[in-house]
Amino acid sequence: MRLSDQDILAAMNQGRIVIDPIPSDDCFGSFSVDVRLSNVFQTFRHVKMPYLDLSDQESLYSVSEACMEPLVIGANEQFFLHPGEFALGMTQERIGIADDLVGWLDGRSSLARVGLMVHITAHSIDPGWDGHITFEFFNAGRLPLALNPGLRIGAISFETLSSRTTRPYGSKKGAKYFRQDAPLSSRIHQER
Image (cartoon, rainbow, N blue to C red; front, top):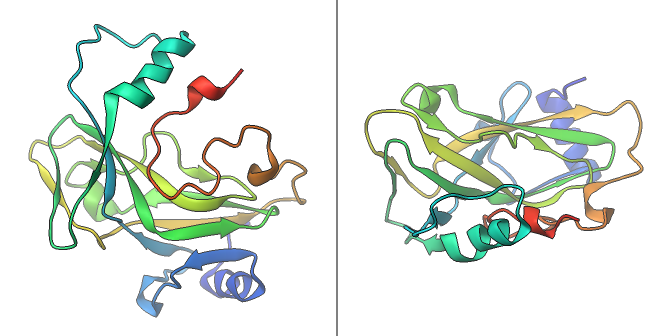
């Protein structure tokens, strides 16, 4: 069952949901909380690799280490996402979720209507998660999109599990993105 705005506030007061910094009242919807864009991104470098072999651990390692680079923009600067481009970004807010809840990240409809996708597949936030949420930006439109730090870029909603999980994200062996404070590139090469 999805939590209402009242349930989200109650869970925050109980420490079962952490949103830091605490969002202002106008960030709350009827069953979600708006999240804002930070000023930290990961972008693809232009490389001479002919392709990326998704079954090759070495190739996957090279994409995270050699193909992507961090980009930090100033508070009054903009990040430009051109048509057909992909980049990673992250929330300004650190999000923490109890091990009996799951979070769902959604983009804003108004931004999607101009071509901005904020996640490709990673819209669930595991029980036991703690860290900044990574956005998987894609510009499906025809014009470049200027993204400003602080922009309300998406919303998180929360749902109760039927019982507390025995495998919260932070206690999993190999929790590759736990407590991330930057939009990390793929860590799939760390899987065995």
